[in-house]
Length: 280
Ligand code: FVH
Image (tube, rainbow, N blue to C red; front, side, top):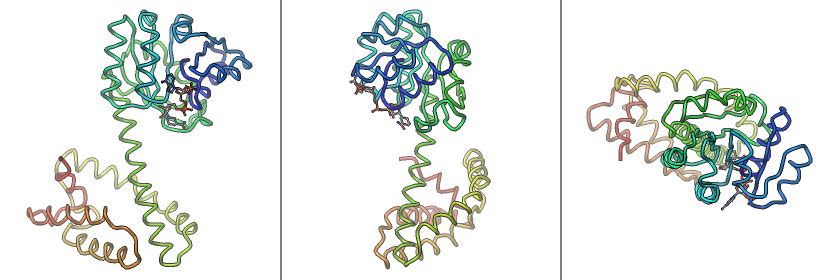
């Protein structure tokens, strides 16, 4: 295990707890002590840790950290399976895959969707992609970390899944925070309102599924109503926000897209049809 930050330590501890012989390394050596206490072997260098096991799991801060550590390991990865759980882009994953292949190692990219306390439970998700044979060989080991899924041989696919899932979460949550500001500005209890939203959000999964199908087919039904009707509501939403001093920049963006779509003769289509305008 290379990297013993919050996440790397939780992963290493899970391997040890489940009975896997585990060798750990971290740039700041003192972070190895709690792992040594529970039974992990501490390596003095990253290369020494790599040499100790057929499976090498990497969990570092970011791409530059991975480059620095793998650079110090270099040829020692020959014959190993490298599983990199560090956050990063699809392009970084594909570059890492080439780097490993050139040195005779198999590469699996993985991403982490969840927090350290959930490692070792089903409540944390790990999408993987890359070498199918390496994934198959180590699937039972990776399964102890949480709920895992294999997305395909292209090493970038786990990162595509991660970036997409994280993006949906951030887009939704920033919209939620703006809405809380609006509700609070109107004197309504935000915590109680949040509870009501938590109760009503169950209506979204069927909508997401039907929007996905509409985007895939290019056949846009009037989901959420026709754009002609929604555009009028959007005007109300923008002026409501402005009237209570809440920023409305994204709503104006949505309205602009609706106006463009209507001007192009698609006012009878629904919200999903805005997808047609999203290419840069
Ligand atoms: N923690 C979380 O909740 C999130 C959940 C979602 C996914 N992430 C990703 O997991 C990666 C690791 O995150 P982390 O929480 O373990 O991060 P830190 O506790 O900050 O530990 C960072 C480790 O990286 C080492 N490191 C940083 N730079 C270098 C470098 N140039 N050379 C060698 N090692 C480096 C650092 O070492 P040290 O500072 O202790 O010496 C830590 O081991 C991350 O991609 C998240 O996005 C976690």
